[in-house]
Image 1 (cartoon, helix red, strand yellow):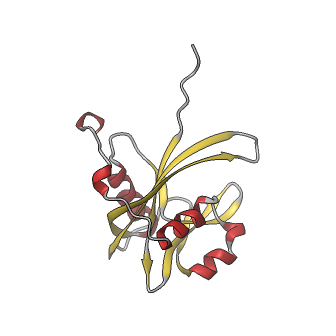
Image 2 (image 1 turned 30 degrees about the horizontal axis):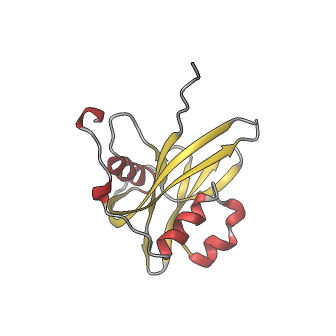
Length: 155
């Protein structure tokens, strides 16, 4: 019998205001990188709950997802040669209230960036999915959240 392959499930929030995108600067083993508010799905969460939690932890803002931009499968090879496959669910939505709270460990801060700023900082992106998700958002890709189903036993 072969081992069961388990991709790492992540979520990301694509948030635009006044032609700028809310990004986070984070410390990684490869140095400081730029990413959307994003992170891993925790046990007992729906995908929507995960993106709401991750956005709050990384930006100190409420977030209400309104649409799914896309699902993305990518493989990452670390400098040590470890291979990880990510299954990312990218959402767009409404940014809400900001709270006076510390940001998640490793998050240096938030920054609003224009598309050109993001394009010209591609060498600092956490992954190629950063730009791909924004491009898909700008192309108008949207799917209703009703496509996502979380069985009650998973929560």
